[in-house]
Amino acid sequence: MSENQGDQRNRRGNRAATTGRLLVDGAGRLGGVRRGLPSAGKGCLALLVAFVLVLILVGGLTEQVDAAEACAVTRFGKIVGEAGPGLHFKAPIVERYHCFRTAATFYEVLEDEFRSDADYTDGVLDGVTRDGQPLTLTVSVRYRVPRDNVGEIYESVARTMDQVNEKVIKFHTRAIVRQVSQRYTAAEIYSGDLAAISRAIETELAPRFLESGVVLEYFEIKRPRFQPQYEQAIEAKQIAKEEIETKANQAKAAEQDAIRSANLAQGEADAERIRAQGESDAIALRGKAVRENPEVISLNYLETLKTVNWAILDSSNFTPFLTIPTPNGGSATASPPPTPTVEPTPTS
Image (tube, rainbow, N blue to C red; front, side, top):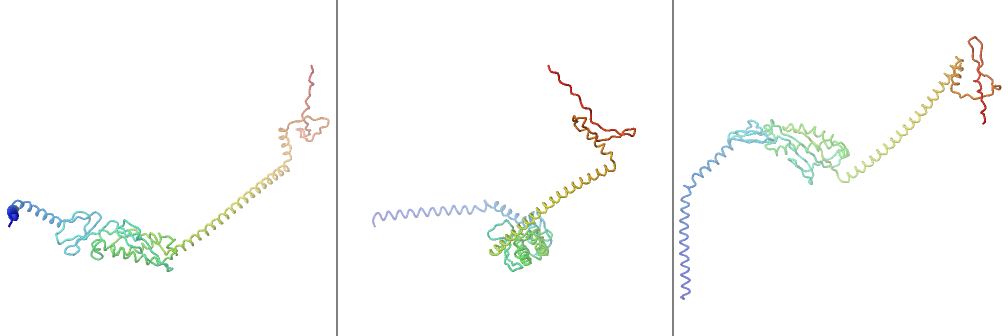
């Protein structure tokens, strides 16, 4: 054996001895730690176990009910009452709380491409109209579980809120909507009064909900859809109908204008006739007054003279034409005023 080989064996032996000592020392220290653990952590472990036991005990003795919930309380599986919002004490293990949502809950039937914040959603509802046209409907439902009904609901209808929505809301809504939609034609649903149809469905749906202890607060048909070809035909028919109604309204407006013009012309003719009749009646009254009272002529003449501008006439050719009675029974002839004398203007 060469010297190099001997040196290598010596080095390997030294390394093995060193490793053995390290393992022995490490095992000794580890053993010391293990032997010291129970004495050092005994108090902490006891406190931890006691804390967990307290939490379990407290959790088993109380039940927290949220503000928007009410719970059916069972003892050994039998309904013993209802519990409203708040902290309640209960018998551990033997009593359980089964809670339902008492606030308004929303169920919507909508198309796949739409999203909703409703509590429960479902796919579109299909049906057939009275005239055989297939359609799909989207609807919105708002309902509520009264607090006093949760015990009956848990015992007879459903054990969870999800089951209430599935067994009561979804089941009756889809069935009633299909039934009622068959009473209307496609045109009545597509372009009719959806609010009236919604009220008809709500009238039949509310009693079905109430039989299961659920109150229906609101129902609405949101959007009826038909096959594209049928919708196009309905829209074309609707446009034609609107054009006919527009022309009829225009004709009626023209007729009203003609009647208004005729009434106006008749009114003007009646006014002219009334004015002419009034003037004729006035003339007749004046003639009658003159015939019955001849002195009226003299009085009118004197009144007229007050407004006449006098002219200078030749007295030799003037002939009186009015005789005025005198107080002594005679008569006098009215003559024009005397002719003024014109003095010649002196010349310088």
